Picture 1 (cartoon, rainbow, N blue to C red):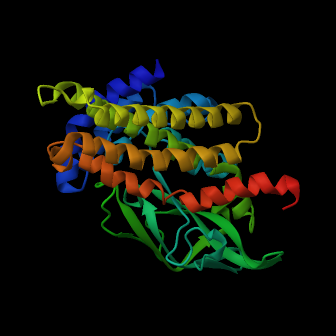
Picture 2 (tube, helix red, strand yellow; picture 1 turned 90 degrees about the vertical axis):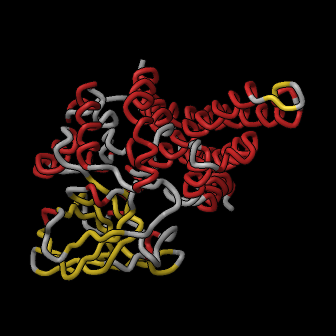
Length: 376
């Protein structure tokens, strides 16, 4: 039911607007609000949050199925199917009233800020910092590549608040803060123009002696890295699921083309060069799908899933690159024309191997998980 409902919605309400987003590079604010309202009318807003805070209360497996379908349309449009960051569940009682509950109701929109120009994969190498000043904190520095911060009413930002010695050398202590748009000393600026996911904007955040009361700390001081590890690793599962959905849409187009286009007096799908491509594509898509669903299943049962999530993210993102490339090949020259969405899928696929942990980081996680029990 969830899959059918979401797919019907994206095909009916989102697909018709994709060409405009691709052409203009933006989503009109009134369209974004309309999408959000229709999702709320369906009763599917904030499906990832527990029912007791106003969310849909879906388990990880069902949320993964939902995210798979939301991977099919333009991300600039699907972002309005609000899924507030799960880390907001770490809010204390007062913060719940100001941030978590309004986010679940669709009244406030959040963005998550970690990445910096000199701190991508090395999260604990961040330079953006905060220093205590009485009972307040003063934030200074910047973030970049912050997805959909242009839509956000507040950001969940991780900054350095000290240093500690570790077996690998000194590492920065990290603290998480909730920062409202419009706070003095805080500015959200336009980011870079990306070839992937047009209309889904990245932003630059600037903090210039931005004063925050201690009540804006999310979780505990210096424990932001632990907080991120507890709540955010599931975002890799979301990326994997969305890649599977987009790959299936690309495959469906390629399959129809192989059955309908004729060359040398027969459908091109009868040629081994094309039929074997289709066979490899669907096998890889199914493999990525099962890896992703199995990782979500493990989360629901409370068993370790870090390696399985990393495997799903690694394989699904690299699979998407191969499948979209082969789909373009099945179409030939038309595959690269803007008349079809394949060129967009091809471009969009590239960023998936970078954000939410690069393919190299996923391989590191997998290798570490395998070797640690052996003392290596």
